[in-house]
Image 1 (tube, rainbow, N blue to C red):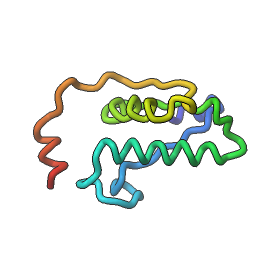
Image 2 (cartoon, rainbow, N blue to C red):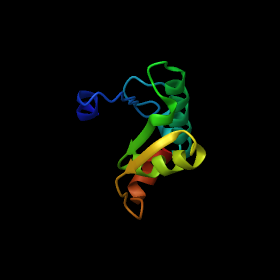
Image 3 (spheres, rainbow, N blue to C red):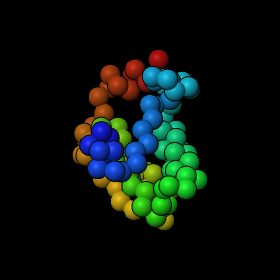
Length: 101
């Protein structure tokens, strides 16, 4: 994000629900919830006069690498580009267990 802003690209970053300064309950949130949050962010960007809605892109890594394609499917007319880093094929059972707590 820092590199992109230094290149003049507007960047919107957000913590997952219930993480950092965000509200919500991380332990109950699903990937679908996170995708909905990203879509809300895109809708916000579209309201900004300094943002060209035809040039909104999405970058994801780790879990964001899973979320980015989910968002792209739901918002194909908006996203100018999508880039995500490969995610692991399988999910670590401990990660699943942590989410259920």
